[in-house]
Length: 59
Image (tube, rainbow, N blue to C red; front, side, top):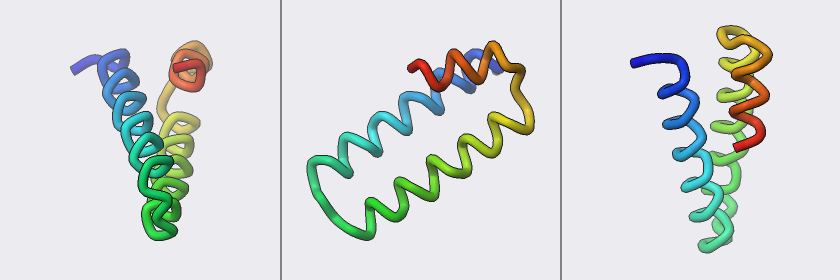
C-alpha cells in the first residue's frame, strides 16, 4: 500500500465520519470525529511530505 492510497483511504474515512456526524448530531460522535481529525493531521505532519499533506487537506 502506497502513501497515496493511505491518503485516499484516510480521506474517505474522515469524509464518512463527517457525514455521519452531520446526520446524527450526536455529541459523542462529534467528539470522536474531532479526535480522529486531530490524530490524522498529527500523522500527516509527521510522516507525509508537504505535497501529500496538501492533497489530503484538499480532499
